[in-house]
Image (cartoon, rainbow, N blue to C red; front, side, top):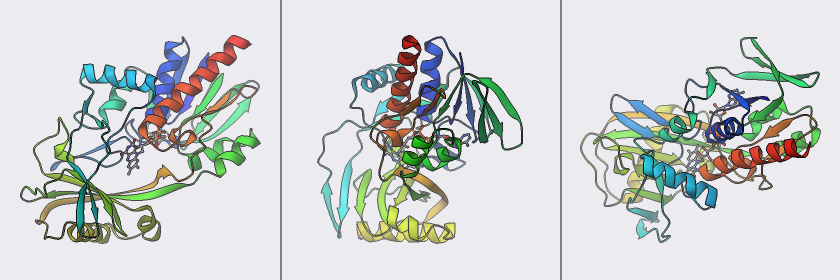
Length: 327
Ligand SMILES: Cc1cc2nc3c(=O)[nH]c(=O)nc-3n(C[C@H](O)[C@H](O)[C@H](O)COP(=O)(O)OP(=O)(O)OC[C@H]3O[C@@H](n4cnc5c(N)ncnc54)[C@H](O)[C@@H]3O)c2cc1C
């Protein structure tokens, strides 16, 4: 059985890997130049930055087992950063004693591991899909066609899944209700080492929600690299703001939150995530239509975290296999 998987974030990669493990042939299509999606690392001459997911947690037993295997292989490490909450000029320790994990030496290490030797076409944006007889044909942005797939798995953020769902109107209706919020990520390196006596902070401010010293995570370089994330509300009302203005605004908010002057920076960059996290996930889990042999997964089918992305891929493949056994 040949399965096309659109999207090579953690959900699509895990789905493809598990399909292959069950003896099927999975072919991944990814519009970006690399696999990893929102679990990615931006490299620069000034150091590397995890500009999407910052860390992840593990609750489900299956995912915990996967994390244990990654820990043993050095793909992920525990992050014991000093994490605080900055609120109204004050600072408090972030109380929850949860274990936080990060990919090593960057978040994208996880995608690299999952990718293994999977068949993946990078830089291919799928624009449309059609059912020809009982097979799927995919068409890419440049008009090239990929025919003869028995099944189709869509593993992209909800709004990007909608164009592929016209053959299953219930899915189309359900997925259209899932909104995903934007987020601006600012990456800076300070000219000299800056130690505000924490490694990361949840920030209660109008514009800034999170700051993290990337270099406090295990396996990173010595450069004093920081990542700043905006609040959803601020991003929504500053969607098209100039990158320099975004950087200035978030650095100013950082300075106000710590209550002292920040050192000058010698590198800054900005990335705008238009679809960063789902505000109202489906929660019911991945979708599978046996008649059309079409499945949908992605973090937003369960929640809004890395673990949800991974588990959505696993749960979808379980449904596909159950269906195959029953028929
Ligand atoms: C700023 C930010 C901070 C976050 N912080 C955390 C955190 O601290 N902890 C945590 O657990 N989670 C965090 N998350 C969420 C986490 O990153 C996601 O839950 C997880 O990475 C989602 O994986 P996914 O595979 O479902 O989707 P994605 O990673 O979005 O993967 C989808 C892939 O599909 C590709 N694609 C889309 N359309 C097409 C198309 N038409 N053709 C081909 N390819 C296509 C995309 O390029 C992408 O690679 C954060 C996310 C962001 C953006």
